[in-house]
Length: 348
Image 1 (tube, rainbow, N blue to C red):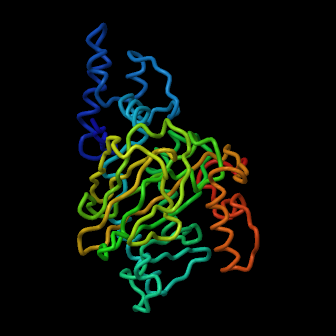
Image 2 (cartoon, rainbow, N blue to C red; image 1 turned 90 degrees about the vertical axis):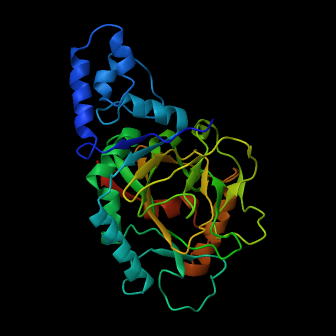
Image 3 (cartoon, rainbow, N blue to C red; image 1 turned 45 degrees about the horizontal axis):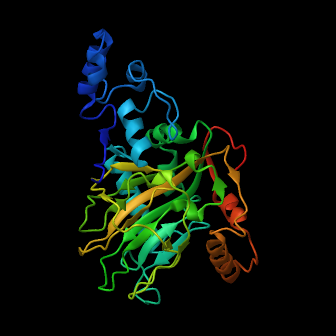
């Protein structure tokens, strides 16, 4: 059976008083009865007294509950409800529209179009641009990566020294009929020349209601426990968007979880978790904003001779064509993007 997404409300929002009452109750309980009750969302400190356990994918602190940590341990993702306020989401939407209209042009920004409209001469607006990447030099959008409520959870995976590595605002378009709005199943680590994977996490926030109709995220729970698999372009008849590599060999019968999310909900997931998204079958544009974070204690690796060499060569060709810089390593491109958002920069 596919895992059901564990959705936990951000403290201080609806649902908080119930958790507080449960903490008080647990404080007075002794003996075997406490074990059963501690399975509900409580503070990690209280729960751990009754459930001593070693966790591989999260760090000890007082943010995640025992239930949250166990869910991430088992499944490789965790949804936090109502984490990003609507006012901030509107700011990001407004800035994205300004970028689409070419009213602002942040340095380093990568603008991407769907393969079916890549050579379109349509007037610049959100109907042409399907994704912007590397907005680390845009103050308005990059504020997402420095939000205290985001970093509070990120620190549970990376520790206190945090780098923002990869930024994206995704504007999944209505499908043209060629199914190009799909994103093949992949592992984000395929694109990253830094390790270890357990010190990397993605924060992905819905900017509106997202479900199977407009192409929600689809994850294969538990696949964060596997290794990095070879990726390449899938052989789809309708075409594939640039750098939308997919896993070439995986079990299509593995149980999947479709992440239905509301505006402001945020999913945190491991870079080895296999995930993708389906077609947008609506007439609207499905928006989400995300950032991959890593501990600054992570280290760079050389991808030559590995399954990641193909993505390095593709990026090298793009950089040489756009900037005239030949043979730039994958490592150097990530050094350029990386920004410190908390603590100090150590290795990355």
